[in-house]
Length: 330
Ligand code: ACO
Image: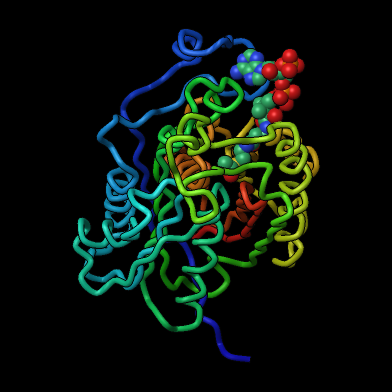
């Protein structure tokens, strides 16, 4: 067996747009109520980017803060992975734009597409480059401007999402700390349940697709909900088992922030009291691939993570896809 390098998160940063959009404001845009949204989702407000603000703008700021918190200089970064469903362009990769603006001359850069699970896939991918000895410093970013993909006339989807970015710096950590186990999964048969139908090679955008809003996010909410409740608990249990731990060993659970009811169902399945679960969906809504690193940053800032804690992070989303990791905070 090769001697794998232990990898951990050594810096975290986030960036959230300034503009807060409350449920009350949404009441003026679609037929909905604050009460309905809070009851069904737990969301009270979300951040929405300005028209001229793109995903890379949020990604660069989150990355700067992550590098600062890690005490790492841009020229030390070997690789940048941006997980996003809302890239600035089809190409160039958003990661390349971030590489240039951060000033990381020797970094490779690529985008990774796994919708709301993107950050989990990017984290596991980035860690593999370090554990194999290929790179020393990897920047992993989850960044989204979901507001640009939404149909603001569709009350069943536009109330759910928000914009933001979260970034982590990965490096070698002392043995016994850092990533203990990972689990990535996909069931592509569920692809049509959550998709942006037009704008790709299957259905390039044209007047007809735009008239039918097919360039926007479409979702079968009930089916995605069912999938999410099942997979969130299953993935967390699997990754705890792979780490050689038991449920009682989990100190903090950081789930993808899509809906408080999904989070509570997963916590119940894990037998975790809610004080061991990070929740901020009320303030940011579903920020897709940015949700887990934003929640992680909040956990650190609020002092909820101390050295030696076992943390489980789980994401799920379009694909359908899911991903989970267990790590020991150093
Ligand atoms: N305000 C008021 N009423 C609404 C709204 C709204 N904003 N949206 C839908 N309704 C109505 C519906 O039209 C429906 O009315 P009807 O019965 O007359 O047809 C009624 O409310 C109930 O609708 P449901 O869809 O059954 O409501 P549900 O309790 O399932 O909640 C929700 C909907 C919140 C979308 C839920 O299904 C959910 O959270 N699903 C998972 C979504 C998710 O996590 N997506 C992210 C995946 S991550 C990624 O990769 C992007």
